[in-house]
Image 1 (cartoon, helix red, strand yellow):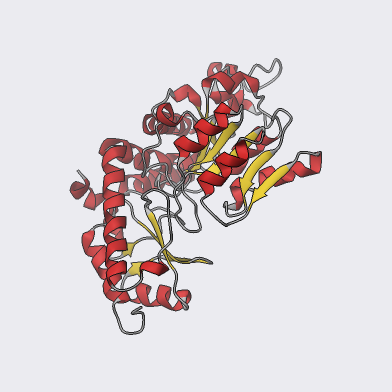
Image 2: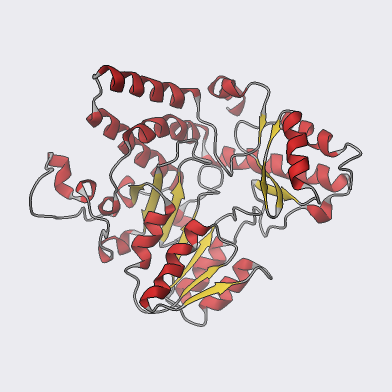
Length: 370
C-alpha cells in the first residue's frame, strides 16, 4: 500500500524528509484542495458551508484512527485550547507534569498556579512513565504526559501510566501530537480521559487544525469555557444569533471556530492515513527507525542515540556540532531538525529504506564517525 503513495508526495522529489516532528508534508490531494479553495475564495464563488463539511469529515477520520465515535472528538486549533479547557475546570488537587514536555502541554498547567493549584513538575532524570505513575500514587487531580516526547522521541508506556493513575482516582491528559497518525492510539486499549493532538505533524495537515478526544463519561462534566457558535447544538439548524445557549452533549461542545482553509487542507491527508491503516503506518515507521538505530550503533553512535522505553518513530542523535551535521545532511538531500538534545529524525509513510541509507552514509563520513 505504501509503495503506491509516491504520487501523493511527488513534490518532495529526491528530498529525504525526516522533519515530520516539526511539520508534516501534505498530500498532493491536500494542496490541490487548498488551491481550489483559494481559487473559489478569490473569485467570489466560495461556499463556507462546504468548507465546514470538510472539517467535519476530519472528525470522522481522526475517530477512525482513535477507534472512537466521531462525536467523541472536538475540532480545536491547538493542544493549548484543550489543555486550558481541562485545567480551568479540574476538581481540587495537584497536577503532575514533566519539565521535558513541549510547552503546549506544560504552560497551561503551570498557569493554574496563579489560581492556587499545586503543580508538581518532574525533572529529566529517570524513566518518565515510571516516575509519573509513582507520583500519581501519592494523590493528584490529573497527570499530563506526551505519548512521544518532542525533544528526544521518548515513547511513554501509556497503559502503565493510565492504569496506575485510574487506580488512584487520577485523570490523564495525553498530548498525542507526536504519535497520532503514525502509532496505534486506540483509546479502547489505553482508556485515557483526554487526548489532544495538532494536525500539522504526523496527520499531514496545516497548522491551525487540532483534535480533542474526551472520554464519553466526562463530556458533560466539563463546560466549553471558550463557548462559541460551533459548540452550540442548534448550529446544526443554522442558528447564529440570540439565546439560548445549549452546548452539544458530547465532545462537539468543545469545538472552536473553524479556520476554513486549514480544514480543507486537512481532510485528504487524514483520509490517506486511514486508507493505509494505522497498523501498517506504525510497522513502517518503526521498521525504519529500528534500521536507522542499528546502522548508527554499527558506526559507533549507540551511546549518542536517544533512549526510549518503547520503539519510537523519532530518533535523536547527539553530536558535538548538531547544527553542522544538520547542514551537512541537508546538503546531501536529507532534511532533519535540530533540538537541544541533538539532530532529530522522524520516520513516516513518505520515507523508505533508501532514504535511511542516504542519512547514515552522511554519518559514515570521517567528520562524523564516532
